[in-house]
Image (cartoon, rainbow, N blue to C red; front, side, top):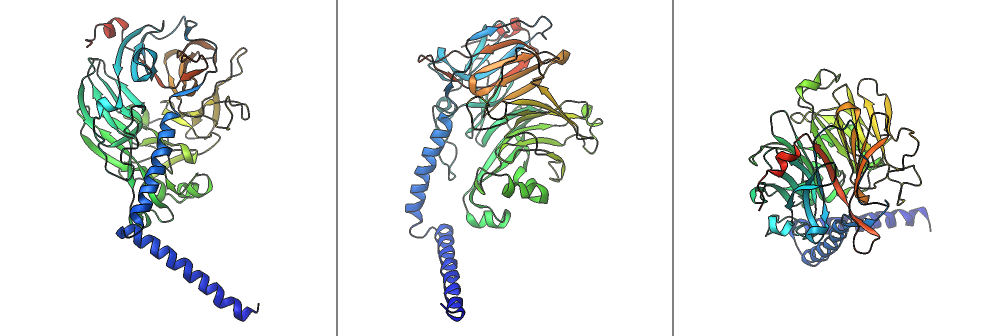
Length: 440
């Protein structure tokens, strides 16, 4: 074939490709044939995908050889733990429990998603994909009076009283995290599902509809949204972070960032963090291996890091110029065999110095690993509470990195699987005060 013949063929090919793109965009934007047929097929595929995703959080192969409590920390800080999981005494449905260090359950709440949200509150492209009995609690806060605030994943935010009655519901796609700020309000992860290709093309060039636009929302204890900011906007305004979508990210459509935590820098801590200010927000984007700090009003990114952790969770301001990160260190194995398991890191914001807090080389420490979920909470005296989510374990380490206390969820009837525990959070509340909360 001559060069003279080749050029028209190439131009013809480009012309066909352009017309195909134009037709696809037009049918989607104006809902022409075959939009309805394709939309139904995509919805069914998405439903199957999301059902599978939700089911992933229910049962996992059991790794640990015990259930209940093992060990006792002599210098443990007094208090209780709020634990979110699926529970055997409630037919393995989602719920929340407060327990003491002996493992005694002091209080409980039923978190059946279909009880809390009898009708799906969303009419976007995901529609009822998370309106499922098997959905789960992800992100919570325990009030001293026995009320509890939590997300039903991608379905909404709920406040229950101690008896389990609904105080209020927020019908937004909230997910993953709830953290209190010094004003007594709560920062909550949320998401907008953007179906329209033109909106995506205009706001986020290079991405493909549909897109999950991750947000952070400040919510009052009464359920009023007082402020929100787009995390995806903040990423796109920073050339360095935007680049990670293409170089690190899994996809350019649907769930690009997977925002899994947000926390505000308090005025009491701010002076120890060079370049940061009170009110700045620390967020974690799992699918970009990225932790960063930004101003929620201007969306200016002030600090960021995307290594050495892999698909991390739960960064926290420690108050001494440092940030901790729960590093899932995802490696595709069941038990972290290829990269050594999950880790807990400390990063100095000013110098960039990194320190691995756990594991710390203590003899007898077992490898811990969770591909999904996970939390780390610093307590007094240098202790930490860690949640090994997938394998249903919460454990406490002392300042030397030695495990001094642990609790593991009961196994299912098959004896081989265990339900995920997404949060084990310490509160300095008296067990006797918790026992006195009213029950249904």
